[in-house]
Length: 176
Image (cartoon, rainbow, N blue to C red):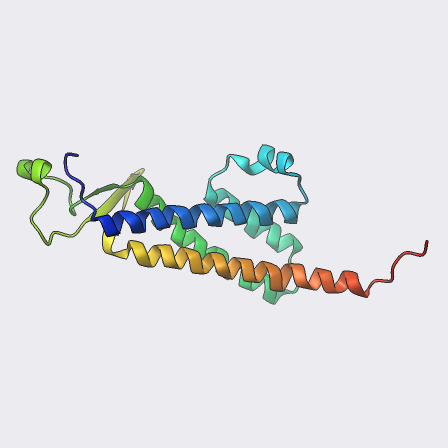
């Protein structure tokens, strides 16, 4: 493509989507490693090279086994559902081809770009399914990923870590 279909602001927002997604994946790795009680090396062997969707599936299933009470699990599932939807957008944004809706079908668009006011979209084909994403939604998507990431962190501290710390403090110390 000889012209750049994204404005500078849209490219910055695209970068924000990528950074927020990387933050999410780092946090997901930490939580999964903790839930599974794995060292960093053990985690890398089992899940290190997996895509984010796979990690979301694993966290969902491990959560069903380890998270009690059910209201804490329900909250985790709600957050993971949000991430699953946002990850589909992330995949379209990162792996899609950016340009006008329908592609660059006029020869002069290849050199100069489409007429001013033509919206810019990412189109990503996976199998027979084609997803599109409007460039004007990039900033909102980056914010949504950051907010969902914050929700996951809050859930982890409030519904997972804090109850375990309280339980451990109630236990009697071993007699020496």
